[in-house]
Length: 244
Length: 307
Picture 1: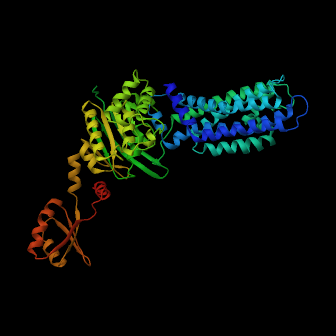
Picture 2 (picture 1 turned 30 degrees about the vertical axis):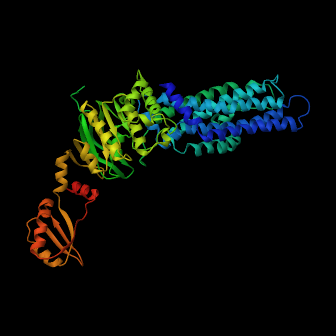
Picture 3 (picture 1 turned 180 degrees about the horizontal axis):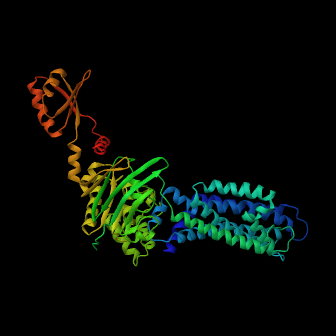
């Protein structure tokens, strides 16, 4: 039952043209890393600061939220939109299971897209697996971010049909501006969880975070759990729209 | 499998969206057999079917299916099948894979076999492995029905199942539904086409403007529909002369002369159509045109609501 649900979702999510377009997006940080490595002036030794800037700027702030937005909001949202979700829901399947599977597939797709990009970006700029474990911190933080963002957006897509727009506003207005202005809002910014996780895993000084590792981990678990609960609550009460 | 309680029970159910009432205080029960839900587009048929299949919460009232509340009860789909109206399907799957996925989602012990039987029932074997994205409307409709049948449901709900099917497919689907009903399945299907309902349903629910306008045996409803006042539009060589003759007939209730036309209202469709030829002959006029006015299904329905 779960396997069928998994394969249907994966097929829907990855079998589309937009998955290819998004995959091209993952080439941006890698391309930038290659440019820096072979055409830039990084001086002697590992260029930690440049690597951090590239990973944060292109992976944490761009690729990660966009990938999670696309996969997270469409894993369930596109099915709701085109009406095929009814075929799924007209089966004796617990709704929490549907939400969890959708979140797992969306997270996996986002990880597949972003984690290799984070790893490659670090390795290319630093010329290998650095001793300060920046490559490890970047990869793990990206994985954590993929799961939290994707699950959050799957949950959001059960609440509103405008999940994509609201997600965009959340990422590029709330997280990008508001969170910088008021430090209290760091708890409601997935970006801070990602940076906090990375910061906890490497001593590299250019990697900073407003939350420590433990705080980031707790906040991540809370957001994932809350998103699944909210998603289940709304999917249990799913109503077919009157447009039909 | 016969149970004493009704398979589907709808009790004083209404559903509104904001200020708009889509379904207004409807009650009925369904037993095994085929019931047609007939009504013009926008009458509230889909809203009602969605509520019965647990995809809409009634604003008031209770709907129970096989003894349990339909709303928020996914477990009911172990014994209930639903064919939604919307055409979208998993376009990347073939009909067999679609039916098989449905069987797996039901947790059936032998999903391949269940899918094979369902595909055979709707006679879609020839195209079963082609992606549904390339299917015609009628093929998609049949694939959807196959997926809803894999678990041999006791209650089957179909929203406009004959949309897009050609006459041969329609006959075949009707035959299949009749067989299922004979085996004890409770089938509820909606349609805005009188003939479909007439040919298939033993029992009819007529819904207009969200209200149950009539329910029961089809023949009874058919009589209601034909025994209502009818208006005919006539054009003749001498409208006034014919009007004088018609006004004397007992079943003619009104005669109106317009510029070029004679409108006649009758209380008895059959008697009027039998008498009109003689009336024309006897008054010596030439009949150029005779046609019934307001014969649209909507007008029939609104008459039923008014009665």
